Image 1 (spheres, rainbow, N blue to C red):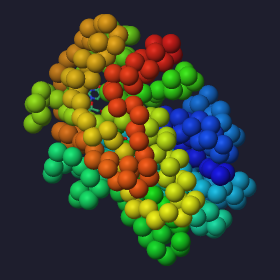
Image 2: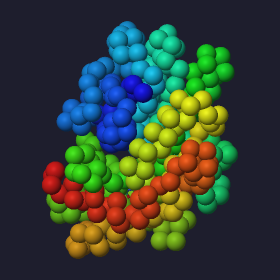
Image 3: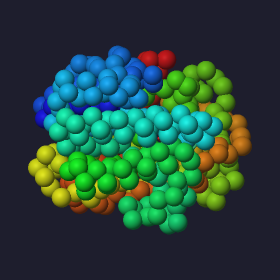
Length: 323
Ligand code: UFG
């Protein structure tokens, strides 16, 4: 397939581009480079387009006429979304609407959408499956949920076949060392722990009084290569016209607290991580852990990186060379 990847210069998008190219697909990246990196676009041409620029998006989709689109381009920081909701609704929601319009006009009818477990909000049960109520606790989660709802409507009325993949917390890096996780500013836990080590500054732990066994937040860390393979499987299922559900969770089913992640980094690096306990970050649910049974069952997805230590080892190898 010829696949247009929005946000293909970002962390998850670039790893997915590499994976899809390896499986013989033709890649075009559309990215405004506001948070992505030109060096991460290696598997197809780059269209430096902002999704808020509708004529430019229409032009790019008409020029390339992709068979399918994987839509990653979005802002994805929970804390930032609480402080600046307009940024998130404009970029994530309006940008997605523009893309969908351009696709419908160009008769491009297959879309895999990058959604998130942040659409669930505070968990009502230990494992979140897709039937869990969606009640986001922050504008980031809301903006993604709104796009999921739009996609359901376009599926019904415009024949746009789509599938939303709700990721839990992406982690890891390319074991071949070509790609890794770099954000500016960096707010994600694992690279922040690495930075604490490299710069010898304490890692800020946002809250240690959550209702979890050690008081710190629990997340389900899913490897970036396993996320990439899920996107390929979803694209192939759409191409084969397999009936899919509107959304699938992607996670390991195992949660790690902030303190547990710190301990794994200490084991991998052989160094003590300095920490400082700070106020909780607004919008952070105490625990988010996936049930990803449906993705296994319907997509045939089989996550391979089930040991967080292995993911952190690869990420550290990449990070220490980069920084
Ligand atoms: N944390 C710290 N200190 C830090 C950074 C993070 O204590 O310096 C904590 C956070 O409070 C949270 C956990 O580590 O409890 C994970 O935080 P991240 O920022 O790494 O990830 P989030 O869970 O906030 O959000 C990420 C992505 C979202 C995605 C979400 C799903 O940014 O796009 O995972 O949980 F939706």
